[in-house]
Length: 133
Image (cartoon, rainbow, N blue to C red; front, side):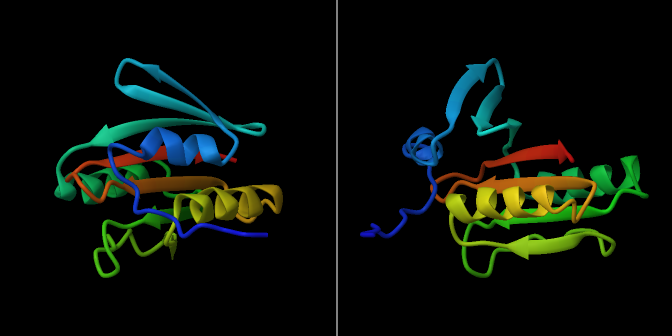
């Protein structure tokens, strides 16, 4: 199978990259609803880079007993955001890898909750989502 190299995720190709995975997008106010197979995601936007660390800490504080996986598409190779110590963390290189990883861990019930962050390469914004398995 011939595969084109994935472009970095950006404001102008966000919808295209998600739709290329076979999903459906619906914009509802500040929330981007993304449905892929039987999984539904509500992606919200965080504008400041330091807000991602706060979002992760709030998620840890809100449900400390849940086995949590944090899947991150960082802004750059070395721009990863360290999650709280009790989270499992996977940093991936493409949008496709994010949702492939999500599907694998949820099908195998490897965790109770998945946190996803998708950093936009041409903006300080990051899209985030919490998914309860």
